[in-house]
Amino acid sequence: MCQHTLTLRAQKVPPSICFPWRTVSQTMHQSIPSLRSTVVCLLMLITGSLQQCLPLCVQASSAASTNTGRSTRQSTPSRPPFLAHVTDNTLDRARRVALQRHEKAVAQALENYPTNQQPPDSLNADATTATATGLDSYVIDAAGSVPDFADQLQRVVHVTTPPLLSRDECRNVIDMAESHFQQNNIPWSMQTSGQYKVAGFWIKNIPAVHAWFTHLVQTRLFPLLARTYPDFVVSPHDLCVDNAYLFKYDPETGRRTDIHTDSGCLSFTIALSGTDDYTGGGTWFEGLQPLQGLQGNEHAQQDAPSWNHVLSMEAGQVTIRPGGVKHCGHAVNTGIRYIIGGFCMHQNKPEIVRQLLTPPPITDSSEDDTNSVDILEAAVVLNPKCDASYGLLADRYKQNGLIEKAKQVLEYCVQHVHPTSGEVNFSLGSIYMAEQDYVKAKACFETCLAVDDCDVEALMGLAHTASQVGDTTTEEVYYQRVVATPGASDTIRASAFCNLGVLHENNDIELHYYKQSIALAPTKFAPRYSLGCAYASRESWKAAIRVFREAMTIVPNEEGQRQTLQNMYTAAMHVVQTEAADSPGRSQQEVLERFRNLMGKENFEILASSAKQ
Ligand SMILES: O=C(O)CCC(=O)C(=O)O
Ligand SMILES: [Fe+2]
Image (cartoon, rainbow, N blue to C red; front, side, top):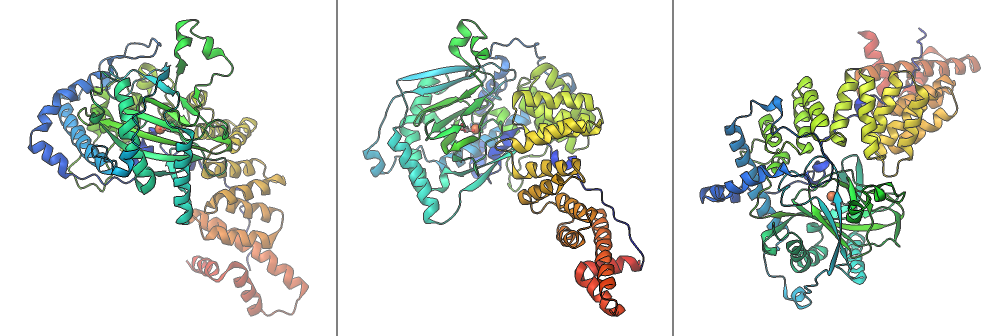
């Protein structure tokens, strides 16, 4: 029998696994299937409400002109030069698309959260029209802009003082949620938020919480929003809830949310837990500055060691702000933090740009031109200060194979709109890396990290750029940071562990790293294949065969299959030869049978048929 050689180079998880095209994390809230019906929008069109709304659309689209933050940026041209070709017709069509989306979203919102209907008597009886007596306010000092109504909705985050809900009420809501899952014997589902997962549920899906929530919104939250944004919301009845969820952050399963914007022009976050209930956690806001900090020494607060743009609230406190402000929920270190997040729309003020950035699911049977590049180009033209649009447009160009155009859009955004946008810098870094421009790639990923030191995708990018220039020490540092990052997903930690194993090839710790990786991502091929190689290089032939056999069940491509089979074959040969030396009387038939059993019939047959070819 011929002696095959082992191909024992362990496999790093290739960068393609680590670099999905990361889009603006607004997508977080799109992942939930929408049931929006097309009927309403068609009716509205027929009855002429499109015409009525058009002035509002124009207002929305020109709304980006003010930046409420202190920063002075280079002035942004009204339209980026590479979008000179976008015609007025295209803009009108985009407005109509956005308006249709808006009408459908409002109809769906009122169906999900019927805030326009009288609450049931049982709830009405204890109706509280509690007024928050005070608000603490923080400004957002950051480049970029919210997608719509930037001149009406100041980029300010308000926190209610005192709490809007009593501690008992918060406890009661948590109990309702927990008992729903216990009684139905189901775990909390995991919602995807960009790079992270967090345990939670959509409030409309849990009846008891839903009824309480709808009532709370009608009696306390909408009135609070109307009082706080009197130039934008004339009456609480103007508003509706696009989406609302309850999140449960805990250190094991709860993770954190990615930096994102919400799907509505106004948002609120209700703290159901207080700072006694957990450590870590809190809401991070991009560029958050206490108002007082701005009046005196501008940088006093910024430089204070405790100030890290994170707001922590006590149970019952609520933050309200424009939905387009970037934020995230931090991972907790201990304890549990429950929050409710809600995104509101103004029923009569369509958010033109956000709607253009939020296409309905592909399955939607409307005539909405979801995939069209010109819709995203129009979004950029309608609000050239909103960096979210640039990221999505570049993403679309990239999907269409137009890498140079994508790069141009991203570079423009970094230079003129938002130098530290995480999405844009990550996408640009990925392009530079593909072009093997590791210096520029590194700079982009470092910018992402400066904004969010938990950005594990940027850490993986930096590890990869270090690897490409042969700096394995730095490469290792970044992988170690990934595996130590609270809230990092199992998949990305698994990739980092696998690559740590490869960096430590032939050291004992190599095995440990691959096993960690497999435990986190049991269906990933690379760590299993690499563990097989590690066993084989230590001449632990039977262990190697076992792991290669497992790898064969999840092998992603022909090359992987070829290498795995070849290594398995060699390992099996060693076992058979050793056994033959110990008991020399075996017939050739017996040896072959043993060989087949070691490899597994299915693998043996693939090998046999490939040998025949
Ligand atoms: O956990 C938090 O504080 C933020 C959650 C969030 O993204 C939101 O409420 O919109
Ligand atoms: Fe959010």
